[in-house]
Image (cartoon, rainbow, N blue to C red; front, side, top):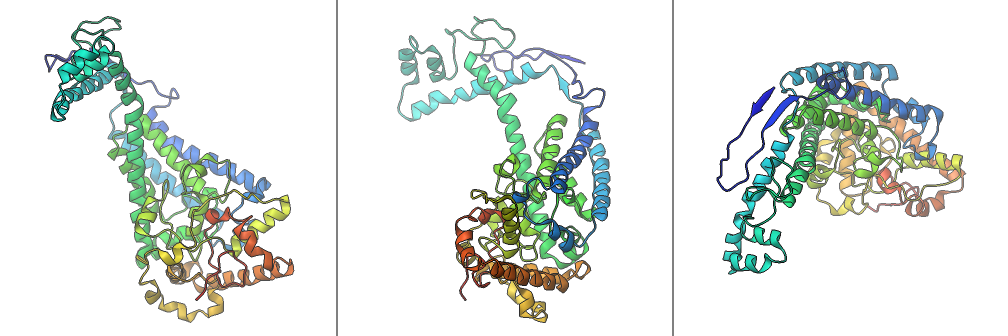
Length: 495
């Protein structure tokens, strides 16, 4: 326990209050907050994952699936048991790092809040000192303005004088007197200081942490795709899930899981200057977002999928054989993809997504026309700068070993073609996860999808269906990879 009295540094500023500090009681007694910070993200991971798994096994929202259950079973190159095992390994590492991180943090204290608010009130008062000078530069007399305002607007008059309220009613930071002496703070200063301390500063801290973790993960994630050794050694394990599901969100190589997720979140937490309880919610929120991004559903009532365009549909493109080298951003926002030109530009829909959507439509007898998930503009395929994909066609020499029919679905011409070429080359490089066989199997699926469309008499109507009823899929899949697929897609390419 500490008892401090702080003397006045500036003679004309209000004094700061005394304070006594005590340890902050735990949020869930008797569990210490530092231990809860380690436990809560893991509990959140499995709670949300099991919610989506429950939806999945009971087939409650088939109309919002990104993929059919058959695709989950046939296209993934790893068993569910292996996924659970590797997630538990990563969470064990996460627990150790979180526990060690707790030792670097001081214990959270309470009792100093009024003092900290008063410090902000002082800063507000000091900032007002610049107002008379600023008015003078503009050719205005601050004293004259204050004199005319004082009878009707005394607080504003005090502001004009640089925060000097010698004749005004003020509020002391040391007490609750309604009429404090001249060395007190005004009510508006205390209100603004409280708002800054309790709301604005924490919001800025969370914003900084989000930007840091997004930046950390984008550049390391992208590096693992651009470097062949890093991809095949570490990151390719995560991409054995071509059809992601919720509890596979942290299915990674242990080193990658530590570097991208655990260390990235820890750096963001430290850089933002958060306390233990803020970190608890930041880590838990990041976990919720990561699970949601891999859930396999485009739920219109899911707030996490509405807050940002980086959602399950956006990230699902990254897990496809034609989009692996696009949509690197995670877990919160997509600004790095858009600033650096790595967002998928292939357009509207793919036959695979459409087939899953058609199956759901047939089952429920309706189409959700307003679902927008991934925000890809078909025209971007041609109009956006080709960097950083300008060398992808040159680098994908191995694609010549795959027959053209097995490279289907065709991407539209332009930037998307280069994105798809580089992505498919990465699939070929990852021989442990299937290599060329993955593309061969996907080509067979596409042929089957075309047969399904033709046999159902929908070949002609699919284009308008994608443009109108499936307009929402523009952001769910961004997959107009099939521009030459005979009208199966709403966006067709011409070469």
